[in-house]
Length: 201
Image (cartoon, rainbow, N blue to C red; front, side, top):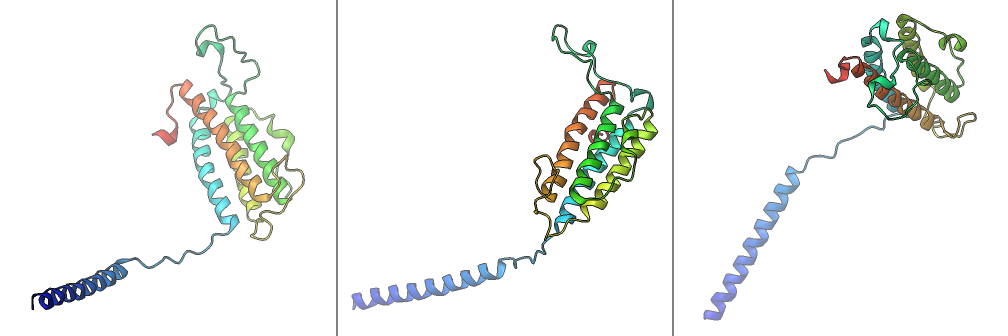
């Protein structure tokens, strides 16, 4: 008699446990969010977004630097004595801006085959802030136009004349990476002149 009671209790407990497990499983299933339907982003859109982010930060810095500081370059007097570092070949702020504009035109013309819409020889000869800001903005506009030629089909095709960056996608990404290298220098130039970069305000 006692054995039957024990067995009955075990069966009843197991049944209850099974029902509870099923109920918990159903609750968990109901609480699980539906898998989001994510559409694939085109290579051009992804790369263009990267360029836009850099463009916003870069243009903020070059506009922030006063016109009379475009000829500024770091010198030995700014750093601790005795470092023995040579500064005679360091680019001025304006030369840095011109260099990035030239690089943008090079990278984006190489990946797209589009011809630059400026006289490349005149970029290095710029002397004013207005000229530098304008040509940098133009180089970004050219970059967006070039990136628009990248498709899922050609993004990773090998292209010639890319100095080791063998595809359109890698060259477009490297153009932004190169720009951020100089952005970091621009930020230091501003701080050396007692200014806070726009991105830090």
